[in-house]
Image (cartoon, rainbow, N blue to C red):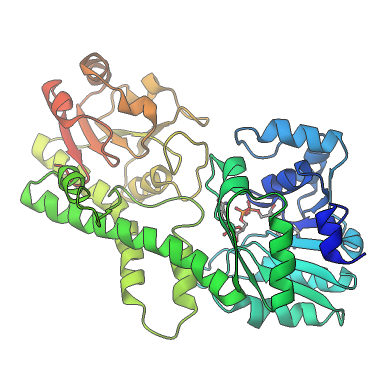
Length: 427
Ligand SMILES: NC(=O)c1ccc[n+]([C@@H]2O[C@H](COP(=O)([O-])OP(=O)(O)OC[C@H]3O[C@@H](n4cnc5c(N)ncnc54)[C@H](O)[C@@H]3O)[C@@H](O)[C@H]2O)c1
């Protein structure tokens, strides 16, 4: 039976390499759609947990699906690559980090491709979901797979999911499919169309690669613009959020929110993948990245200004929010963690942290005798502070100072409660 038919009747065997934030939920969704999936990871502990029906990632609806697909035998995890020999479709979802100097590190990807190359059977389809710089499928991945001397198909389908809403987005987002040739694109399109409800769009591998990094770079540059506006507004005594609200009433303007940095796995990384693909000096993109990273230092500067105004020496600080986005549990590249390191580097010895979504100090313990309260994540819990709550917070602190990196505290209410309030773009 040819692969197209096997995809249509779901008898194609699927192998997924890399069972992390992307690969594990993806395996569960594919298995739940009726395919048999072999998940492979170098992390034995995780594969053992998966085989017990445990979700290794904290995501809504994932535990139920994981339990179901392991119990019905559609998902089996392991560390043995030999299973790939029987797979009709192999999806690679390993991490693609950057070096300290922002150069893409493809060691995990290359090693995964070497393993696929050694084990792959005839006429299999290989799909790369990992985020890669434009040109990587043709220049790095294909030459490794060619060593197999097998006939195979190859496509890139970048993953665009948002942690916190992974299952919904895996199924409902539009998919870009870029094959290295027409047959590869068609087969990959056929496969994704079996479980994706969004549009499944065909293009080349290079366009698919560029689309993914272009999307996240757009967001990073837009946020950098909002941050640039925020810094100018601080200088001029203007509330940047009011400006952005009115500017966005223009039918063709959509300025994102400024704040104390950009976190998460993708946005801080993908602009560097774009930059690495070109010999040109991509100044706009690189400057945007630098400005967004600078915003942590800006939080520290605001603290120094507050210290000076209040004529105090800051002893203890409280950081509220250690996840990179509001109301999720993901701490990757979170501003709260970066701020903590910045404060340590600058000699602040007593730092307490509170986050309702992860293990941390308690709310009260963090605030007791604190001189400054930093807010780094827009959790709903911080958004609803009324005068009573602000008074309660003030009574716990030694010095009532709020440095708000996410525009969550009402400045007027905070000032009425007796706080010195300084926010990014609103001081
Ligand atoms: N996390 C996200 O929100 C997100 C969203 C879109 C795209 N992406 C991209 O998807 C890719 C994967 O990201 P992630 O967040 O899932 O990473 P992750 O670190 O959570 O998971 C990667 C997994 O691959 C495993 N692995 C590494 N080398 C392997 C090998 N040779 N064989 C088998 N397994 C191996 C690791 O042990 C790990 O479990 C990255 O390129 C990332 O940029 C991530």
